[in-house]
Amino acid sequence: MLQGTDIPWLRGLGEMRPMLHLLLPLTIHWIAEEMTVSVLVDVTTSALCPGDSTCSKAIYINGLQQTIVGVFKMLVIPLLGQLSDEHGRKPLLLFTISTSIFPFVLLVWRQSEGFVYAYYALRTISNIISQGSIFCIAVAYAADVVSESRRAAVFSWISGLLSASHVLGDLLARFLPEKYIFAVCLCYQCYIILFINVLYLSFGNESDLLFNGFRFQKKKDMQMGDIQFCQR
Image (cartoon, rainbow, N blue to C red; front, side, top):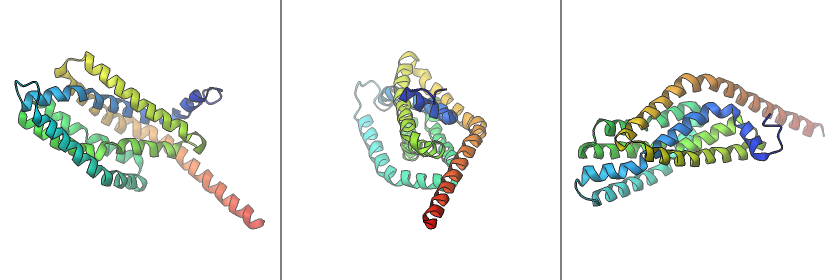
């Protein structure tokens, strides 16, 4: 129904139907990640510089984290992309999203100075693995299951969901009490892993069939083209 409409953005929405099992957990993951951004500044300041309104340690540790993540991401993202080509998109998505759980466990347990330092250490490793790579693998998965003529529309929808998730994450952080935000974020992340294991892998079989059929048809078309070229 959506694919037969004359409205371009509705046609793009119709192309996303085979990917709903992917986009739902990704949207929840992005919302959970964004919920902690505004609260983390206050938690870090109160743990490293108690009683102060500003904290130079928090500025330095954030700058160090971003520098390390930015350098190592240049090496890790191409490697993860190659691994997703060899071993499949779903196992790599499960691995990259799972790394986001462990840092938040520490802050849910305790928000003391030692736990905050441990959080930043684990979060640095997690960001190196997951930041950027999740989006790239999701786009690669979309390229596998969506026809070439519709890929641009689907890629645009994925980018739009990413931006919308950031807005929703900020809104939820404003309404939730600060002491519950990390616990809610951890619950969201655990739900995503459960969703991927129970539902995503099951519904993913349909998408694998779509991808295999698309790849077979493409290969068949290429062979027919070669035959017609030789006959000429």
